[in-house]
Image 1 (cartoon, rainbow, N blue to C red):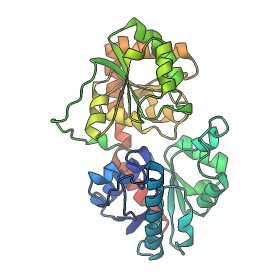
Image 2 (cartoon, rainbow, N blue to C red):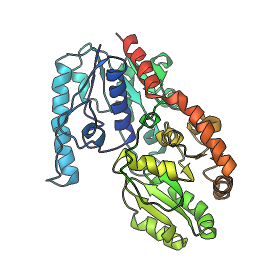
Image 3 (cartoon, one colour):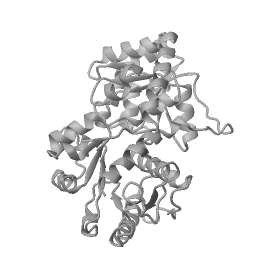
Image 4 (cartoon, helix red, strand yellow):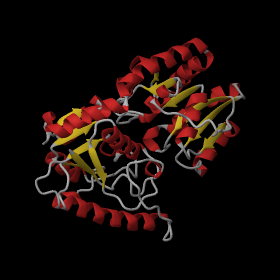
Length: 369
């Protein structure tokens, strides 16, 4: 069997959960399941590809500025994808996002699409900048897909509620994490405070970051040796810095870039706890990353989080600042609770191995032939 993937998630993405998902999937299908995989991509600065073995691509510099250069190489990559799709030299096509350009070139070849979340559909009226793809365009793609992979039962139900697709077409396959078998490089060291909470990823709107900061500010002020490290997604904005100053915790909230898996692994490994205050996620890959790094996990009680975390995490109401602070302080102060969460996280992690994800995805591919 040969599976073709397109450029969409890799063209302008150096890091990110979707690109990580597809890279790990291709790797495990190729090296564990014996599937021939091909990625229709010419130019990319994606870090997973640069350090991996799936596809050698050409990096590019931003000679026209970031946005214009990304757009230029995205168009070039899309043209290349269209040519590869039109050649029909594959059994199953798996687009890596929701641009519908590929439908003109597929012919009768089956395609499978992964739906990671319905956040744009749920929150576009509440938050600016979350309009995403046109909902009707998405529905057309989902209707024409041979199979739809949902990354959680919660996401599957969202798809059925919003897009009204045939339930028989939707298969739930959980994300996995390569940290399950990750071997850290002992020569890479990072400098962090001795005691810190960890926040990973973007911090805008539905991520509930401001409420989280307001919730933990009293804890930080009581414990001046406790810090919050926010990793990834760029430096703090002016409004974020103003919030920290207003709450008088600006010296205890730090930003740490993630320039390798080794850095992220160490940030999880050395944290008192990883806290995920988001109002909504399709799956929440950082949860299982934290499990794999023996980091206690504290989660919002919304969307897919209880499904993914089960009893291996502590939960709070993300709208209730006092409840957020109470649950976090409980973990900070109780070493036995932290040990219990770590042990339960290790056990829960076994359901999220890359091998399981690859095997179940291969079954989906076989079912559409």
